[in-house]
Image 1 (cartoon, helix red, strand yellow):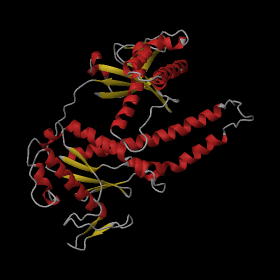
Image 2: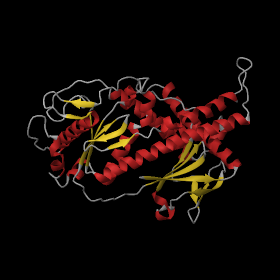
Image 3: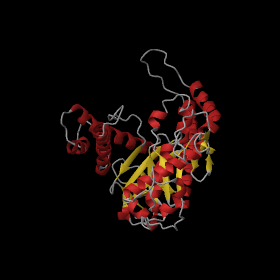
Image 4: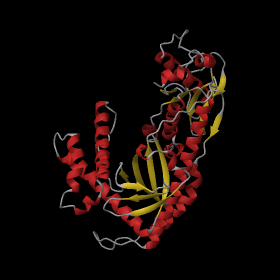
Length: 412
């Protein structure tokens, strides 16, 4: 499944209709969730059927404008939130289990195989439900003529600060074969360096949010200065057009930071998988790490979870093994002899008193992560690992050559 995105070009009146479609989609989703919250022992099939009842309910005549497949997609979103909550409860996830919440600011509406129609040249899309949004021009670098109409399983309209976008979810198989490199890498994520690999290579942390922080604060001050306060308690005050413009400018600046961060993460993950046959990375619990108020902004700006997620995606695409290991003691254990050397976060050099190994702290952790990943891969393949503590980091390349089908077996 791949997703192709285009920008929608239309009239201002069409955009207002799209906003109404998004609000109706949110209404149906929240109503389905309300049925599950208020009822006892409500089955998910009943939640799914609630979307059809809402469309035919005379109390909500505007809900009937929404196409039936879009209403089903709204109920599926509610069911997805409910299933996630049940799964977290069964897995006994520590802390909050993610109880489903009502959406207040939904930004998308989703259609299945009905409710939309592409033009003959595949450069325009028409939405055929009762909202009558009309025809929009698709602006993008992709060509939909390469794909059959039956392969398009979902069409999604997404509202962002700089306009409206249309996403096509297409069911296709991607077979990409690249030559093996015979190289294995362990990745240690950090803040001073974005990551340090077991071969000593590093990538600088771009710090997109920090670089744009001055401009973001200036845009935020403009929003605050144009906000009209309430004169009386409970009285609603209509905000000016200048306030709305300031909000859009602020949203565009945040969107620019988000896109720069994603672009960097995707390109870095792709380069890693193309240059190595095996990747081991530390599985960090970012949810707990951001509780440190001194480092929370830098941790969020680094986007470690997004980066590791793209590593896994490219690993599946290129059919190369990617292993996540626990980060405990990777920085304190010596990669040469295994001696545990305790050190504070400010100490950036690992000095082993037993084997006299002097190495960068992050590179030492990357070597330990590689060893843990190779041991786990060996256990998955039922490989015998000689010596105390399993495979040594110095033999990393040889393990990749133990089995020609290592990638295929680990990705099955």
